[in-house]
Image 1 (cartoon, one colour):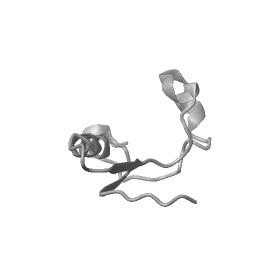
Image 2 (cartoon, rainbow, N blue to C red):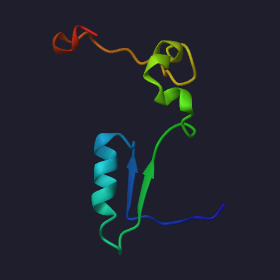
Image 3 (spheres, rainbow, N blue to C red):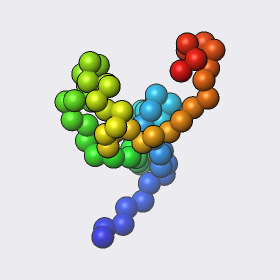
Image 4 (cartoon, rainbow, N blue to C red):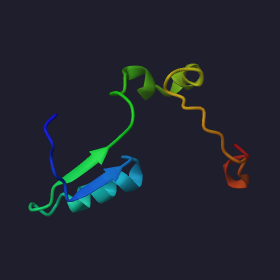
Amino acid sequence: MNAEEFDFIIVGSGASGSAIANRLSEIPEWRVLLLEAGAAETTITQVPSMQPYLRTSKYNWGYKTTPTKYVLFR
């Protein structure tokens, strides 16, 4: 395995992770690594009408949340 060095390692490329990685990468001297779990997405994850089929698939990690008033108690 080839070892590489990075100045910053960001885990999770959600809204915040992507924004932070983008800003840090503006400095040419800094090496930034952005990690995201899972394989590359397939087309099925991009189609909103397919969402019901994804609930029991490998794309659903099964995390539960507390019902929240401002998102219709979902």
